[in-house]
Length: 506
Image (cartoon, rainbow, N blue to C red; front, side, top):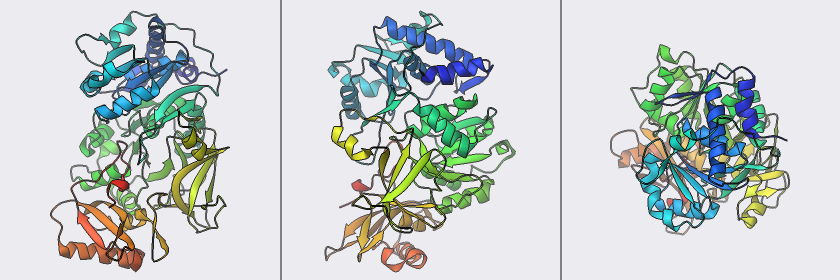
C-alpha cells in the first residue's frame, strides 16, 4: 500500500525535518510538522462533511500554505482533490465544476466573486468553504480545521489508485480532467528531481508557475518535499520585479520559470545581478520551448544556466530535458533515466535522425486517462506510450529540437516550417520582446508564414518590418521569412503561458 501524504508529509517528519519550513508565503511559514497536523485536521474535516473515499473536492486557491494543507489532507483521506486554474473566467468555472462534480469547493476569498455566479447551478456541490479571508454567509477554512483532531489514520491507498486531478490547459478546446495516481509524484521526484535537478535538502525552491499547473506542482511540492527542502510561495501574478524580489529576499537556490517571464526579466532594467542572488545555482524552464537567445542572454547576464525541458499535464512533469553539465541552448535536451522517447510519422512509424516526427513518451508518471473523454484518452494514451502532440527532430547526439505543436506546423513550397524556429529568429532582434508565427494564405491561396510581434518599446514601422524579414531570411532560410509582420501589444495565451496560435490564424 502507498499513500502520497504518508510519503511526502509524514516521511519528512519521521526523518527529523518536522521543525523545518516546508512552505513560506508572504503571510506565514508552515513547518513539516505543522503540515502534518493541519493535513490530518483537513482529512477529519472532510469526514465531518460526509465526504467519502474517492469523492472529489475542488481547490480554487491561490498559492499560500493553505493549498498543500487542503491537497494533502484530501489525499490522506483517499478523497480526490481537483486543482483549478486560478486565472479562468466564470463560464470556464461553470464547465469544470459541472464536469468534475466536486462536492466541496475550497476557494480563496480573493477569487470568490469570479465563481459566485455559478455556485447555485452546480447540483453536485454541497458546500463552499472560504480560504485566506472571509465571505459573509460561508464558513472559513481555518475555523473548519480548528474544530478537528490533529491525528488521523491515513487511508491505505494503492500506488495505482487515483490521487488527484489536474485540468489540462492545452492550446485549444475545453480543458480535460487528467487523473493521476498516488505513485506518480514520487516517480517524477526520483527521475527528474533526482537525476536532472539534483534537488537537495538545503535547497530553497521558488516556482513562478502555480500549484494548479503540473509544472508548478512538481516544482513547489514534488521535488522540494521529496528531500525535505523549503518552497517559497507567491500568491500574486509573477511580475518580473516580484520574481526578482523573491529570488533576492529568500536567497533562492532553484528557480522555475517560463520562457516569457525569463525574457521579461531580461528586458527589465531593474532586474540586475546582485550579491543576493549568490545562492541561485540553477534555473529551469518549461511550458513553452526556451529560445536559444533567451538562454544565452540569461547566462551572460546572471551567470546561471537555464535548463530547458518539455513536460505535460498528461505526464505530470518534465520527461525530456537538458541537464546542467550538458546544456545545448535551443534544444529541449536528451532522454534521461526513467523515460523512453520516440518520434513517429503520421502512420505511426519511427522517423529517421533529423526527420520531423510527433514526440511520444513512456514513463511511470503517465496519467490514468482523461475523465469522461474516452476517445481522447484512446487517442493520447496508447499502451505504455503517451502521444504529446509536439513535433520534434532528433540529432545524432540525441538532442531533441522543438518544431511546434502538431496543429501549428505547416509547409511552405512543400517544406515543413517550424513556427518556433521563426519566432526564435525574430526575438534575436534587439527590439523584439515576443513573437508568434502562424500559417496564412496569400492572394494565390498559398500558405506562407505570418508573424505577430510585441516590441520592447516604441512603435513598429515599415523599416523595422523589413529588418525582421531580412533577419529571418539570413539566419534560417529565405522561404521561412514572414511575408506579413503585424505589431501587437499582446498575444493570446492560456493561463499557463502557452501561445494560442489558433486565435491568430485567419
